[in-house]
Image (cartoon, one colour):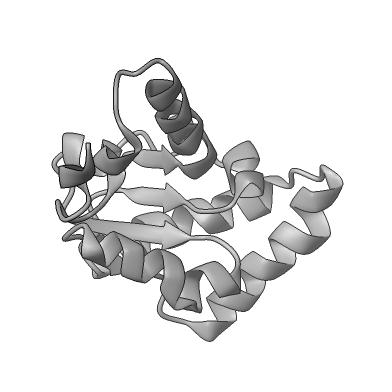
Length: 141
């Protein structure tokens, strides 16, 4: 819903190799009418995995690793593949890369989006069915 509110049609996704190569998240975003792009190179996927597992998971925030993510998001996802923003699809990445690091590209913090959605449901501002990609379930309410 945050992506629709931002009028995003093509979104980049970075995360673990499983997040980027697996079907679950990508297909779910596609069901919402989004084009999803991930880094093209398997070498890039491997380096992201290494940074997440060997640095970020141990609270190591290396400037060159931050720059690596910034460069991939800016050059591969946005300039080369046409992404209009990027989902940081791993909570560890959200600790390393901040909006101030890429002010020209909207970043979407996946953990915060889920937290905000849960709060909206708990406060009865939205119904859980509002987050479904189709309206087939909304008739139950």
